[in-house]
Length: 88
Image 1 (cartoon, one colour):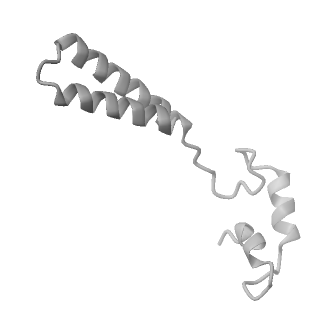
Image 2 (cartoon, rainbow, N blue to C red):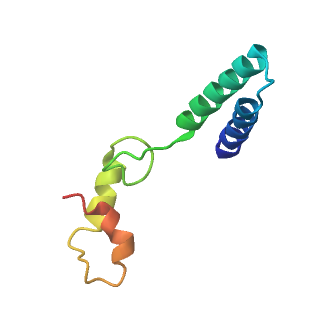
């Protein structure tokens, strides 16, 4: 999606920089850029806070992960693994 967006931006910039560009070319560049932005936005994955197993929902699986890491602190050598379950 990034590459498609970048290509649409580059193409639109080339049309914008072309003083001889026709209205049809401008309209097409705007359309292509709009579609590329929509595709890019649709590709963005925003994780849900508390969804510890990454299935885009809250379930007993998330609770199980939290329970397994219960009591772990930042002093633990594996804290980088555990800290995702520290939700407070």
